[in-house]
Length: 337
Image 1 (cartoon, rainbow, N blue to C red):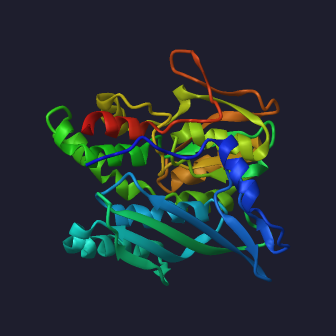
Image 2 (cartoon, rainbow, N blue to C red; image 1 turned 180 degrees about the vertical axis):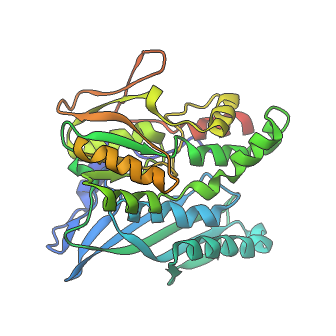
């Protein structure tokens, strides 16, 4: 299986191309912008929340990932995901596995109490693995929506569940043959099952009901490091975060340690970054924990936009640049070459 080392466009390049596409529309409350998780469109009494994302790294459970990854970005707006449209592109030899993908999508949709309302499916010449691009829609009251770019200096940064949850599951599944003689069987089994924990819909909806939330962001490609950077870029501020305060699941520590992946720059769906004023931080964390969701304060938003730092466990400062490279691609390419 061939994996190319690719990833998101660097922010400066992306901004250049987004500028070519933007067009004024008074009904677009939030449009295409770096760091913003989903568009907001004025529909009268409510805002329509819209987001699209592809699944290109996972093969196993790809239908499950496709639903939950986009649902997460709807939820970061404070909205419940309701409607989904998948574009499923398959290698011609995958005819006997189509049912598996659709069964996984249905299971994920049922878990969210949502529905698939359209889309497209095809066998695509030249593909060596399936790709699903999913669009999700939801609704939110005009007074209750959340955006990525509303961080304020002095705000606390909360992280739920742990880092690199999605990356752990993808690596454990895609590199199972490589890992099975290196990792304890029970740990590997639990790591492979972490795909069932990539939803942050519950996390996000609990947060907005528990206290004042200034911003939320779903750290995906580039991990928590890139998620923090996107919060900073969207808001125009900086941050200081501390690796020692980040939750790390034992499965993640074992799997990523075995393949040499960086915990902070490996795809991290399953985690939610919540930015709140200090007066709400404890209430949000306690409510999340009461609902069985681990959470911890990992840093703060700061005024200086040049201060974008994660302090590693060894005390060294990781300066988060404008191009955080996703470590999953490097690991898959190195081991599968």
